[in-house]
Length: 130
Image 1 (spheres, rainbow, N blue to C red):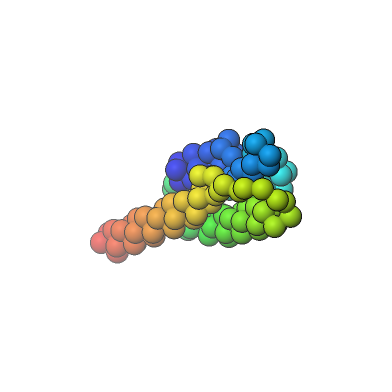
Image 2: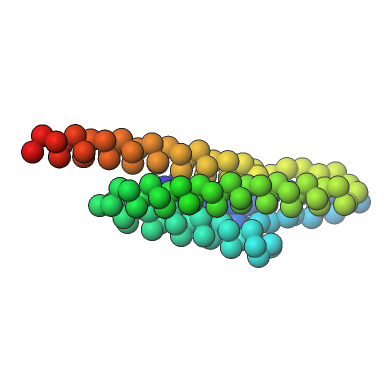
């Protein structure tokens, strides 16, 4: 989940796409769109809250599920935003590395959920032994 936070910081700091018009470079950052920046901040906040709820695994799974839904929405909104700007402008477009960050966040959240569920299974088996 720390990787989700790092990917969110990178999403806000690296240009998502670049447009070259008449030799001038125009960068599109996720932080320039307030709704996209808010979704990314919510994703990072829920990942941080999930880390500190380590004694409540079911709450961690619920928070991670909600975080996953927000991340999918963030990825869809980012791709939609860049796609609409590509169609409305003339010039040469280049997709940035930040476009991959929401996908990386989704993968890392799924891996965290898998690890949390494995911990939950181990704890339940230990409770049966008592």
